[in-house]
Length: 138
Picture 1 (cartoon, one colour):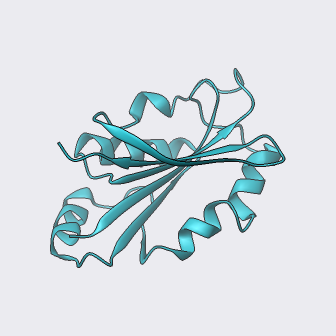
Picture 2 (cartoon, rainbow, N blue to C red):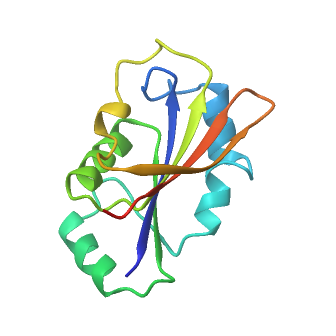
């Protein structure tokens, strides 16, 4: 079965970063940000992607298939909500920004429930912390 990875940019208070935030631009364009994870995937999910179709594709795809979603704005949060409701996420990569209180749109409210294991973390010079989580089998 395929794997679904979600890469998220969020602030310390669990919200989406504001548009034009320099750290958001860094995550979206730097080779250590979203592009790094995008290169490792085989299929990119976009907001509005039909989730019923995704469920079928994920079940029938081989283990080398990696679905990838990037969450950094309102449309992305809606995609995250759907993926969480259907419990489709296997891996979370969270870019945590060293700021808070700038946006009211919560990402953390839509993070998937369940048991997650932190497998790696890295702090960059600009203060952004990357946290890699894998879903633990129950």
